[in-house]
Image (cartoon, rainbow, N blue to C red):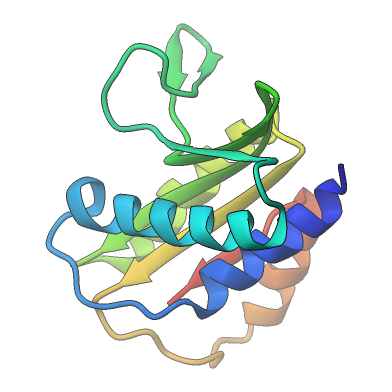
Length: 151
């Protein structure tokens, strides 16, 4: 098993797949991402990985912390061992709220998963790097061990 390659394939897939406009994160965006990631992983690693989304059911992936539960939106596992979590947000009104929520959940998922990716589909305007803290922010995320993809 090459977990680093798994991470790279998932990261590139999330960074490059075509995206549309979505009304619902849970009913439209998450299932679409699951299908695309599953398709790509099946092509690269036939039969090796299972891709789950955390919609419904009692056996959905979760991290228990301080008397509550957090569910990664997408979990990739191999032979029942969780390897990678993706936190998905659909930013329809506030990119700031989506960023802060995604970051908090990604930190929590690092307790259980070797790899974590934050993914935000913004339906509000996303400005290219223009802020004095953007570079410092990216470096901080790298130290924390997860990227944040905003598209």
